[in-house]
Amino acid sequence: MEAWLGTCLLLCLYGFFKEVRPSEPFLTEYLISPPMNLTKEEAYQDVYPVWTYSYLSLLIVVFLLTDLLRYKPVIVFEGIGYVITWVLLLWARGVGWMQFMQFTYGVATSTEVAYFTYIYAKVSTEHYQKVTSFTRTALLLGRFMSGVLAQTLVATDAMNYHDLNYISLGTVSVAFLIACFLPPVRTSIYFHRQEYIASSEGDSSRRLDEAGEEKRMTKLWFTKVMKLIWEDFKTAYSNTYLLKWSIWWAFATCGNFQAGNYIQPLWETIAPMEETEELYNGLVEALSTLMGALSAFAVGYLHLNWSLFGEGAMAVISLIDGLLLIFLGLTSWIWVGYVNYILFRASYQVMITIARFTFCSILWK
Image (cartoon, rainbow, N blue to C red):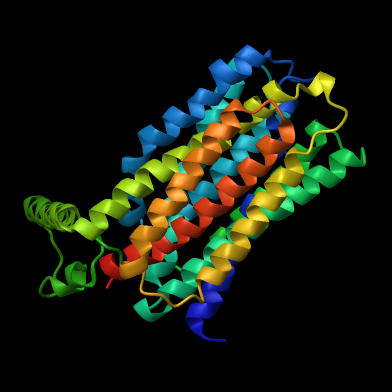
């Protein structure tokens, strides 16, 4: 097996296991039921928003740390964040602890950038389209398995909402262990570029005995890093093609996260748990991720001139997604809500996969 394929496989295993969290499709029902006993208002207004703001506030810091620490430590930290999240869900009680749980979940999800960028530092540009497809497909297959397990175990009364969290804790713990075995990355975009490693700064055997000289070299190194970031910033925002995709990426990702974070409260409003014989949250999550995974995998082998067709596809799919969200918010039929959500999530996965390897092909060349 080629080295790049072996690394990609290990990363895919990590991505798969970290997403097998069968308790997530029924998180709202778990929070408002015994033993948690939160009210709907506490769950919707006090607990769920914490993830949104913690995720947003950490993005810039995580981006810099990911590059500084060269990816792998951040991936390991992501695994730790998920483990802490499910420890809190299993054994912590009360609004305050659930807010802290959402914060640790925000920390874990904000570090996901390391999962998607690690592989580009380990393989050559010619493999970017395939590794993007493979890693995203592994992620989505994990979510599919999560939904299937959740729906099957709940529908057959094999487990209740609380017990599902034990499986989630087990799978994210496996993911953490896999992350520890990922091979380290030598270089990164900014802080560890090949031309700026220590051995290229003259005689690497010379020791900096004087504190002043060491401080000067550190300052020089940091200045170079900031200059590289600024140059890339100017290049990116002066490139019309990248700018359009960046704006789309920001809004599309925001819409996807908001829909995912608040879809369960919406379903609970349309079809309250106490008035519904059986919930199909897990099945819907499974179908949406399966469609997304198949589409993302197919994109890896679809050879089109995305610089020519990409913007048209972006416009059409974005318009369809907007209409789906409108119908999703207005409908009083739960199955209409289910179908709209499946189509919305699947179409997002297609476009974000295209956007990701398009960006990386330009920025990492």
